[in-house]
Image 1 (spheres, one colour):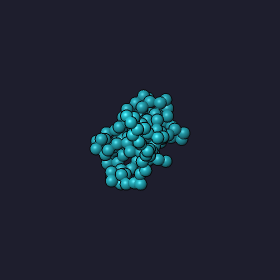
Image 2: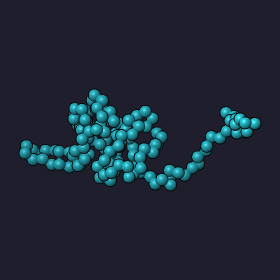
Image 3: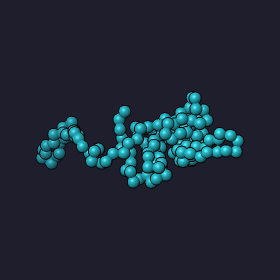
Image 4: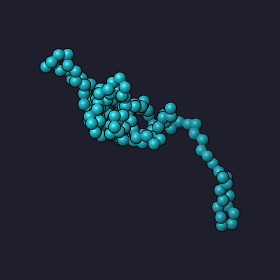
Length: 137
């Protein structure tokens, strides 16, 4: 898969999100506890925006009246019907056996690492003839 620069680190504050488009795909980026996550913006249930969804934590219960809250801001609820997805894996908590939101690998790299070549620019011969500029393609 090709890698694409989608944002500068400072563009997404902690707890923030950004909707980007890469090769015609809408992708929701999230900045949670110093890590970045990317999921498709389309909920697999009925197509609601995941970027507009609510981030919460995971609540588990070992017995009635006893609750454990963990993984703050790592559960994503769809903005339309509230279907929940694990922001790390895309796993659905409404239908974990068959529904999953697509996730994408995210990395943070220094700008100088991205600027290293070799880059090859496409060039064309140019000549001036009287009052006309000609480009040979």
